[in-house]
Image (tube, rainbow over all chains, first blue to last red):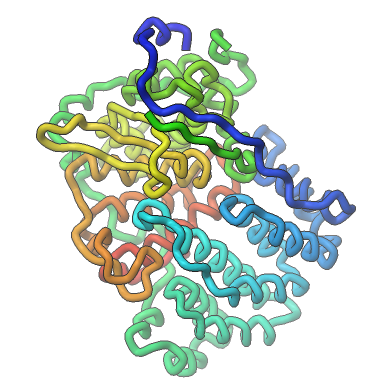
Amino acid sequence: MEDYRKEQDTPSMDDSLKLNESHSNPVSESPAGKLLRNFVSTMNAYGEDAQETYDRALEMMRKHAEEVVIEIAQAYGHCHKNDYPYRWALVHAAAELRHPATLSFLVNLVNTPIPPERSKDPHSFSTVAEETILRTTAVEGVEYLLEGKEIEKAHDMLFEFLKQPSLSIRRAAVQALINSESGKKDRKRIAEMLPKDQRFLLEIERKNVEDVPQIKDPESHLKESAKQRDEKQPAPRMRDESEDDSPKAY
Amino acid sequence: MANCTYSVPNKNVSGDNLYGPRMCWQAFVDWAWNAHGFRKNYWDDGFGYYDACNNNKPLARTLGALWLLNYSAEDYWNEQWNNNILHWGRRYVRNQIDDLRSRCGDGSAIAAAYSGFFVDDRVELYMGFFYSKNVPGRAETFIHEARHMGGKSHNANFPSGSVFGAGKSGADSSWNYHGAWMYGALYLWWFYADGRRTTWALRQSAKQRANLVIDNAFATHPGFTIS
């Protein structure tokens, strides 16, 4: 920022960063690939018509779901293994298709063993956590199929997922099963398939955020010096997004 | 001094193409720079000081997450402490984090909070923060680290089956411990349930991440999951 350049003009002794090439797009240029590319590009679009654009892209994909899911599977295979946001976008796309053709892709993903942890500090960033998020999203995709033509297959697959060692995958599968039409009568079978020390998963409830314990007095959780800073100005009122007020120095 | 390199993942899916143009606004950049104690010598040399709107670079990607943190409640200006965390999260982070630095890191942690006697209170952000997490995930990191700045450490070991390493330290004992994991999960949950000026996909990703934390980061499972 122009003003800040006056702040410290001494040469920096800190870290330096160089950017390599950006990741290449793993989705092909085939007709179905173009539908998928279009969907991915509208997933986080902005503007007044963003939702309509997204809905249209999803509708177009759904019309060609069988071809698109092949593209999803191929692109997923070509993704950089560390590109968790893109891999997640592809799983999300498959789940949003809500089409029986996605079952095989979603099931394969859930059943693929989670690779060993590659992070040296999983508390801060865990590759196992990121891989797990991909799989719980896929479990939800299978849950959506309980509303369609492949109810039985989807139901059976959710039971299969209970054999996975991941607590989160099991939790997602249990939630899907007990909230399905046959949930009440399935409870006993689910309990029998779970390890004894994880049968508590049957008692976990889906809740709305306003129904769980909140933080009642967050101000008391400020450090002393931060309490004194509470007079700091909040962020400015939002500008009209059509205004051009980009920083002048650039 | 360390040198590092990195590739930029797709910016549509990470949300950087959504939040990048929004943070590229002089009044906001000026405010954020001062409120969070950015300093040139920690944000130059490729980190974006001379290119603040370039969302390939760490500075813009950090400012995008701060934009999300500050404007995702419908009535974002109502940041009273008795409101929900989607409203006061920005106020909490603003007060707790007043020295924000970018570093290469050693490839392990994505962020770290330093506070205490004889310590230069600060939050450091590393490569994984900028390039492995999407924009809501980065906002969650601010919330998590801000709670640590308040002096609240983790107090338990991760439970059996946890993705973070069963039996290792770094978990919170329970939801009611009100630790950094609870802060982060609750923020993501509110963002999923009531976040504005965002997209369905980013809200869905927040839901999945919050559920992962709920399942894996508490010694005793809270007993609920996101509806």
